[in-house]
Image (cartoon, rainbow, N blue to C red; front, side):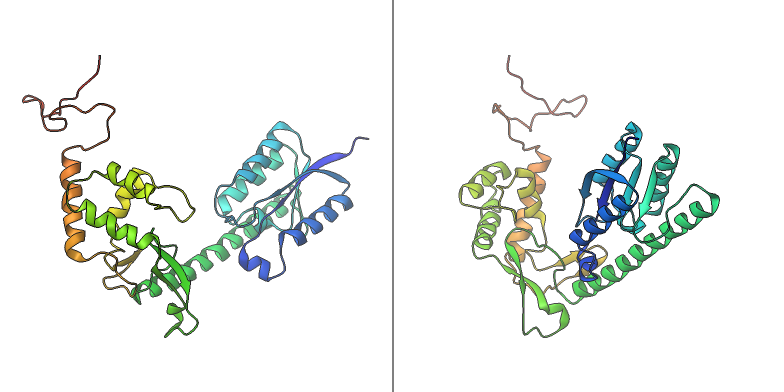
Length: 302
């Protein structure tokens, strides 16, 4: 008799790793479970670091395996490794039952299609989402409090970097943002040049990239990204995250209010004139409008 095939799914967050649920531990336990149930594992899908609430490529791949009839079982440490989203979990279980694919857990009872097991699994899915939602609420509350205390709560925009302070005055001040030694001067220059009204966003994007301005991941910036930077009020000293707001943040300001306001005025003017980079430059481009329809005339090369 040909051995049936299975796919193993593992997922872990930082907190899970602290509890001993590292990817290696999960892999070992799931492979042992497959061996005990006499399944051949054709793939181990590892999506560590990805939220169980989000849509994931690994889950899509498993669903495709099920639809194509390539596996007879899905093996995971527990139901919360697969999902922390109750509707998505129930949809996966419906698909598995429809194709007669077993979902085996190392920890927890395996649904067998009976009314009782389906109910128990559904209740477990709701509990998994409740835990995720509860943790999310606590994290948001902490971040809101940090913002209200004047601290930026996450990865800052270009020009700043995250820094840990050993002798912080309070718990929120243990992780702060400070001017980047290379990028901060470029941000100041970006605002100063654009405030003159002489340069377009495209011109300054090219100039700043030539001078070494990069994203946090080391990539040159796009014009749309530079446009967003020029509107970011973090450089003015404000901190906003979600519903929380602080007018006077505790980080160093890179732009004074007068310069920032002049930049906003230039942005508004250029946007009104439809300033965009074109292959060809036309006389009065963006200024001439149809007297009947009020629409701008455009130039074409023939």
